[in-house]
Length: 265
Image 1 (cartoon, one colour):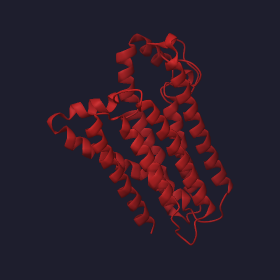
Image 2: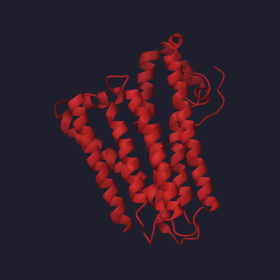
Image 3: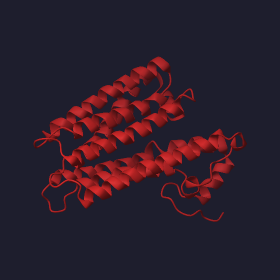
Image 4: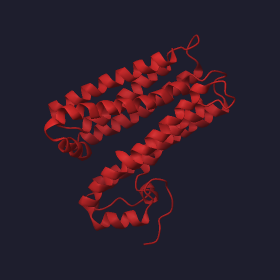
């Protein structure tokens, strides 16, 4: 039952990413890909998390499914708003151009790989929701609080960056205030922090629920993607190209991921 439900949710996300590929071909705007991935991951995970594994859905399932849905709604809406203001996502545009003559076919499989990665996140949400035993334990409260803080922190970081960009006096400048003074990518940090909530909820240290350990894959995967693959590296290459020395100086004094005080130049 557990494996079948998770696999069904992953197949649903694969269909969503196939639709994202069609949208990209029709619009030539890859910015919609992240929005569809976020909505697809959150919705499929929320529905799967509510599937009864032993009788009716538990309070823990409702809690975890609701938080996953709120995460997807907030982040997906933010991506849609951002995408409406730009013609394409430069990260995806670069990847697509590098594929050359077989770009359409290879890009399709690239998006399917994103669906498979999303499957690890879906599994983490589901095994957290399905942990047996009494609901709303301190373990659930801590995990839920971390996820709420992470969603609020990421929303605040996104809002601060958006406000900075809307001020014409900041055109061509680097955002270096508030949360962005503590980390070059505070939105990425809070995104990763949110995925720590699921192993906290899922893991049963007594060994009665080995499925819970699968949830550790979510924060591990998200850290690897954000710090080494599709997050910081391509974004910082873009920022160095557009901001030059100003961004290099910002890099020299500001932590890349984990928040902390700035270093002296």
